[in-house]
Length: 174
Picture 1 (cartoon, rainbow, N blue to C red):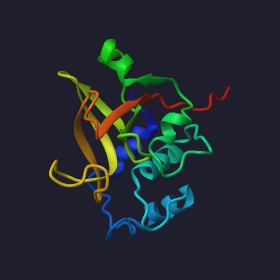
Picture 2: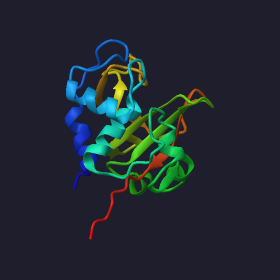
Picture 3: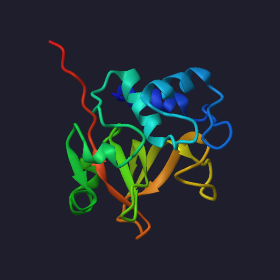
């Protein structure tokens, strides 16, 4: 069964297109949701894309989750797996559809975040992402679309690396 937040993310991929340099979107309803989530013109929006999908699905959201991908790691609600745990364990058993994958650029606050659509052979995964490019040639962390990206599961480079993956939690209503 596909998690609700992933289903929502997939509904935006291939349809959502940024207007200008982080100035808004072709989908004005999405733009209203982004503003509600804390986005403002000029801000990168990968983390807001994830937050909107989580909000619409009714998942738990930390009050400190805003525009920094790293905050989804620092203030994780669900179980966290470091890249070392993922690489030293059975990555296909650890990583599941709907989990959030958080990237960081060096030691800076800059980062990127995506949502696992599928875990593939050869230490690869398909991620639903916002604020990326359709191809590998454009910006991978400040692009203009929501799309599916094929990403390696690795420590990355000194510039970009995976911090880890986080499970998404929902309120249990009894």
